[in-house]
Image (cartoon, rainbow, N blue to C red):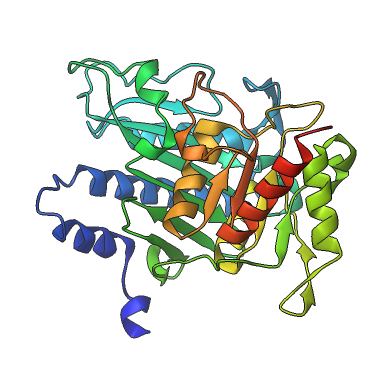
Length: 340
């Protein structure tokens, strides 16, 4: 336990780098910069109730959603923390309609960063957990010039790292560098301002008894999903009834699912056939984390990480969590033939 308690995020990243002699250290530096940005955002989130930072700016983002002031702070902080290191060729944010080019005269790198600066921001005023989600790719465009939209529109299986930061009763950073390297969680110790390893090698249970989705949309769901929820409500798992838990902040719901098992669902429905969650900024990074932890993530039929994106802000239904739970809901969806 003592070893875990004093394994800091920088030390963990550097020790992981030693296992790969071919590594240049760039990805390690990127993760450390993201950790710094997370600390700064965490500070503002924690004092948001005291500062004049809550409330709407009066603007709307590209999705027509009202933008909170704290959203803008997190968005700008991530850009400032990441745009000067010379590691990226382009970035993209859920808050920006188009790709984000690096400042003039900055060195152009080989990586691509996509991020949701403040997921679940509608919960800010209620003091409910919110978070930051990030996704890293290698550029695929030719040359050493600025990156392109093509660099951002890669399928999720090409991610070289992904993770999230949850700002709750404590601040926790969870990340994976993929390729079987596992999922690791670090809790921010406010006493000396460092992320410490608290959850090493996270593995999601093969099946759980928690299901998470907005049941207020029940009558708009496909018939297969309705049948699945009815099945859960009328059955037991390990002698106990299934439990419904829904925060409405994807980071919080996925974090709980990752640790305890079960399933998180944001389906397509009659009003939104592709659901509301964004493939590039939310679903791909969460899918990589979940698969690395032994779970499963699909749109109900196909693996999330194999979807070829066509737009920066493309949406997709998502069924994500314990492998057996996701496989079962997929069966119900096939049997229901996606009828509405």
